[in-house]
Length: 151
Image (cartoon, rainbow, N blue to C red; front, side, top):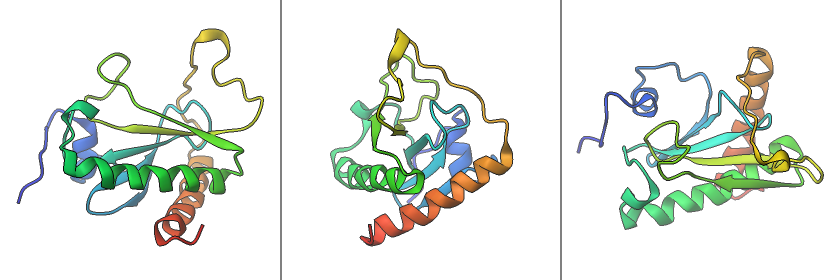
């Protein structure tokens, strides 16, 4: 059965292999995980269902459970991979949603990191490709372990 796909959606094109997949650290039959190219903090990851759904409201009920099991494991993996004290998870529904394909943000947190300070989140495009590859590889190992139940 063909996947729900929107040719104008960058995430659909990444999933289909029509765009660069270099930031993908993990995938299975339901979702992909990739590092954000404009992270709030280094290690900011996205969990994206492979089928095209614009918002959480559009997700079929049968995908919500499996997707959020993966989200819980990604939170664990982000904390392990980056030595974080915790993590922040969130998603937007239309407002501030830069890509119209549901995606869950998972951001590593440390106590005192001031992620919410100043009322504005600052996202900076990744410039150090080597550091991004290293973060991707650390997160890939942690996510593989989390999905296997090893962490």
